[in-house]
View 1 (cartoon, rainbow, N blue to C red):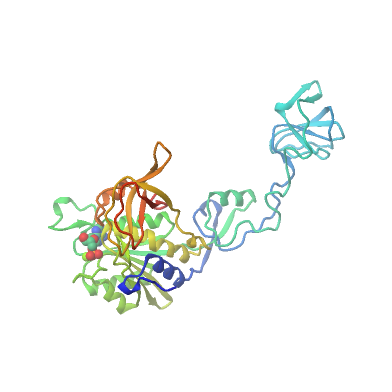
View 2 (cartoon, protein in one colour; view 1 turned 90 degrees about the vertical axis):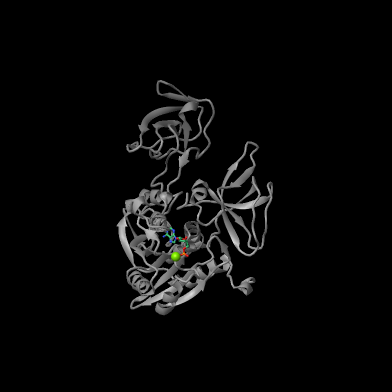
Length: 417
Ligand code: AMP
Ligand code: MG
């Protein structure tokens, strides 16, 4: 698809996202793991039901299993969960039954206890039960031989419950994808360095630990390669280590056009640049590329150094790409959930880039979804980001917005939530 705004040199966020997804192939390689550890992993092989669910007709209520329609019934036994009734009901006979217990042969309906009166062994009821009432049918959930969940599913809690109900103890999943993560910048000091030891202009390397936390929440294995200086030969060494030990490389810093920004040069030497610079705010200097190696290639994502930009570009661009890389079928094509909300404050914006401002959205006392931006909208302002619960997404060609305008918001999802 043509990027209509390409003439000013900046690729649109949508075009960049699509290009990323289209140009990435899912990883191969699987492992078989216990179901209890499968949450968040991607199913690699079909799982076929070895039984029907429910495995037998059973009661949805505590009450009485009944044979046919009658004014009253004679109770001749009971069927408890785990202790079925050993016999067959004849017309006008009943058996006491509990939720989940097998419906005895001959029974064709269950009357809930609340509608029943028992006098000795004689059962009467305030209203008749309809045929089939309160019976959960064998196989109405799952049939023997059916596939339980599609290959490519990201395994979530309901999947685990379903697989466990079908007696599945192990699943074969795609291996975890592996990131190599590094920071670039002479001014960066590791957290833990005493404030008194920071030189003039030094700052803490906050990006690496934040990006690592985000990736780990998404089940990515992270190789933390630390912090590297603004020196091309060092950066080259870092990229080679990263490339050789991971499926993809994430860097932050050094990707802009400053005189000490070597990311692009080194990426060009060792591999190729897919694109660089996007019509996104914050986060314009974002580089995507590839680093070929003996057994394939590592993808390369060069995030801007500014801390808000690094997190925004990871979230908006890298994560959809990783959904594809990790073998998830289809989910990456789902656009993020968006709401319309009424602005509580005016917003300054220049046309030209899609803006992801940090805001807080909620329903006000009149039930109207509203949103206010949080903090100065600078790419270095982390305090406002930390107070936010959504992005206010302002379209590329839009300008200023006024209080009361309706805007699009994207509530934070994992790993921002
Ligand atoms: P750069 O992308 O190298 O031009 O950096 C842009 C801004 O982000 C500068 O103010 C850097 O000091 C800052 N920065 C770069 N890397 C990091 C990092 N790892 N953690 C926090 N801030 C950073
Ligand atoms: Mg720098």
